[in-house]
Image (cartoon, rainbow, N blue to C red; front, top):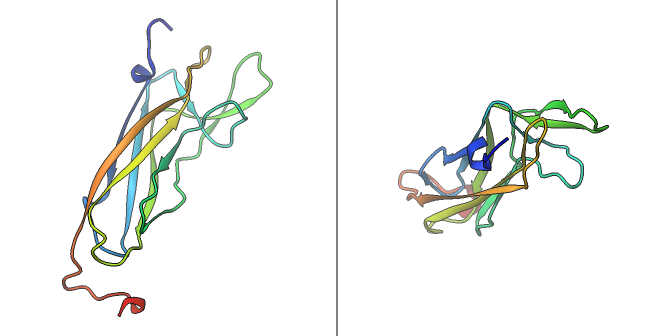
Length: 152
């Protein structure tokens, strides 16, 4: 496959469903992966030694990261190997809920995450790759909103 790089085969973009949050709100981190025709990335579960598509979100005090979701991968076999793999192809979106649990005045944040994956074709596998994601999110005041019972 010539001089192709992982960047030629997979692109990514990420966003939050809101540029702002207020205390006790749930936002969603959305990660979209576009995988070029003829290529795939591994899904879960996967044998040791391979890197499945996933994301790691850096801890922020007062923010809980809930389990994320990707579409179900499809079965895939490579001629000559006994293993069956699960893979993602085409354009897919992952969704990761973020819950801001800190009391008011926790401040603005930058959500830092790393998207991990390993891209392959029918005949070639590339080393695992990562894409860093930095997304700012601003806290908004609770004006006109009431505190949860525990904070009243």
